[in-house]
Length: 313
Image (tube, rainbow, N blue to C red; front, side, top):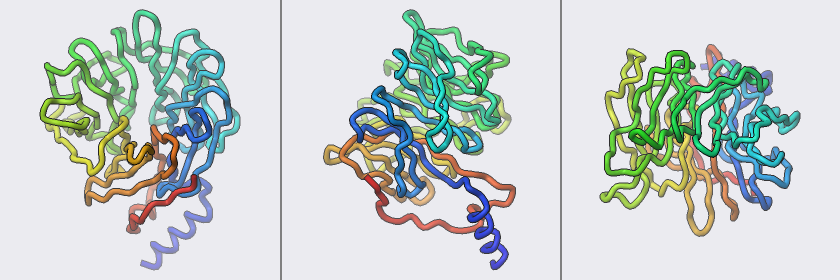
């Protein structure tokens, strides 16, 4: 055990990158991007602009954050360093671009583009070059790249509506969400688990439910995008936003509204423990967690205790 402790100490003092959550908040009068430690401490504001900044997403190496902003008169995709510096507009397009998501190797970014007659999925290089249209159907949005980079999951509001995954290179299309013929559309996809074996999404409200239904779809291990099982996840708190996977693949990050506040929570699927991460009168939403992965990670060798609320309003 001494060698494990030594490795953990060396990793902590030599690696400047550590696990963090980026999120959006209304606490300063308009939507801005913040980051915090994975237990909710050290909440730090990253953007300072009179226009709204939303939908932050970590790059795979944890050094950059992509987000959407309307600061130049229309919604575009921006990227900034992890400390909020070096902010730049990548898309600069008259259409509305949003919901950026990084390819697992960090070279490309997927996003949706809203125009008058359709909403489609695009990808581009991480420097804003080489734009490619992925979908060619109306109302395809909120792309999420699979951990192996083979698939892009997205919300499709027509034909029939649901959560789908597409291979960008072959345009092979697979339905992820459970068919719900009586529902107008799915509420939204929460993305892939860390190992790529599952996709999480929020199903439409049904007559038997008073709250949005969180569902985890397990995919066939053959990699062909076929779903072998759907499971509903009963959360201890109402789901008030589209959830996101925790970086550990065993927890869910989501927003819950209580006593007038909309705060961010973590729910551990394996032990059903709930942890409140933010505690502020304003709205907090859209959490996205990044966690460094080493060949031999001390995080995988040492247990983590889940404590009480850690907030820094």
